[in-house]
Amino acid sequence: MLLAIHAHNRSNDQKIEVAAFPAMGTGFGGVPFDEAARQMAAAYRHFLEPPHRIDWDFVVDRQRAIQYDGDRQVAR
Figure (tube, helix red, strand yellow):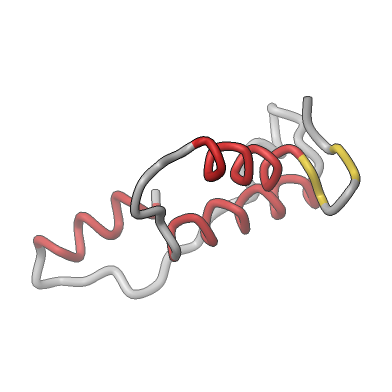
């Protein structure tokens, strides 16, 4: 969604300035609200600071951001 908004804003005069994202996956998916929020925050951080190149260090760091909350494993 973030990339779609970015692409829209680059190519249209009418810019999207505000977006609301529902707690994705928390309904039928059963994802706990705090986990959905953590995942969405990680996605936003990665959107704001995209890598200049993807290497194994980046892959490992991104997987840790998705799979762990500090030292606590939250996803398998």
